[in-house]
Image (tube, rainbow, N blue to C red):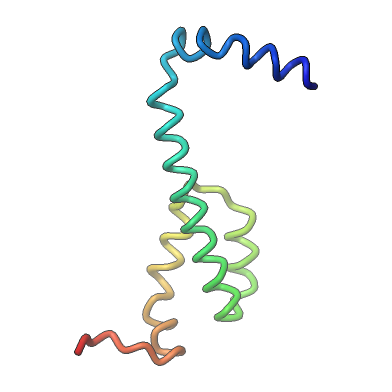
Length: 90
């Protein structure tokens, strides 16, 4: 395993230059971080609202943030009502 990693590390300049992956890797990293935040937030809300089936679906489906965003938008009103968070600003 270590030998394979060292071979990849030695050829990193060729791989990045030949396939021009520098910008794509940065974009992929940003999208992965956004997906991680959205999925964590949606899982937290599903657990807090005792929505077991939503929690399982959110945990298993990988949709790059689309499914968690839909869940968060759908449950926003119900969550605010249950927690007593006011939508009006002072």
